[in-house]
Amino acid sequence: MLTKKQLFTRGMLDISPHMLSVIPFGIICGAIGVELGFHPYLVYAMSFIIFGGASQIVFLQLLSGGASSLVAVASVGIINSRHLLYGAVLSEYLEKLSFIKKLLISYVVVDQGFAESNKFFKKNRSEEFLHYHLIGTGCTMWVCWQIATLSGIVLGSFVPEELGLKFAIPLTFIAIVVQDLKKLDHVIVMITCGLSSLLFFDAPFKSYIIISPIIALFVAALLLRLKK
Amino acid sequence: MTLTAIIFAGILTYFTRMTMIALISRDMLGDKIKAVLEYVPSAVFPAIIFPGIFINDFGTFIEMNDPKIFGALVAVIVGYFSKNIIATISAGLVSYWFLIFVVFS
Image 1 (cartoon, rainbow over the protein chains, first blue to last red):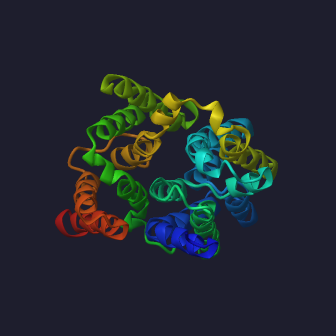
Image 2: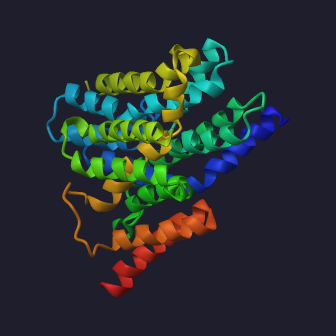
């Protein structure tokens, strides 16, 4: 049985390799916000209040492009609606927590943290304080995101644009799913999602990001039926 | 004005994170749904990966000889065999840089 501290540290260690892509991306996000002409305090407030990677850039780009606040807010909501799926998966492991703890822990659920904690949870179901792993991944992400976006806001885009570091984001997610390429059913689900995301890329409010997972999950349900 | 919008966007985002964790009890989800939820990572992350590779900053498709396709393939191969996140990201970035700075320059 691992202690709370050991689980927290394990979570920190499990997510830290992803900081290789998260930190440059955070710097870029902060810098873009200021370049688009928004007040530095507002750009930073987003990292704290929304805490949602790409959705922050989309929000500012929409506003600076003349979209209404309603459209910008709706887009953030739709982009981040994928967290509903993460929550549904995590709820099994967080069931025993008090309502207040559930409310608090929810704030730090992010893509990479969900991915790494979910992998850990599946292998260590019997641990009593499992949620400390999720707190570890989430808090590491939170601290790095705040520092990275803040650096981008204060120092500007000191990461040379020619390096194309935004490309590190798809790479970080490739690292997350690549081992599932061993399973044919997962490969089919991934290809379905990927192709749908390209097909629906121009759908309003960036909704491809939730439409394609829903299509892919339908395909997963069909595959499960065929397996039987 | 913008701050109000940010606060609303933040509340909405928080609800997407909190709803399923705090308001739904696991018993409300049947075994079939639980089995489908096993596929969530494979069903969600390609929607971030594919556009990140195949669609450029202007929202249009890249050419088939774009260095990002090569970089992504290298990352998949290195990631598959190394099982290492840092190796996967670095391999993808370095091969991408090799093409844009050495080969295509």
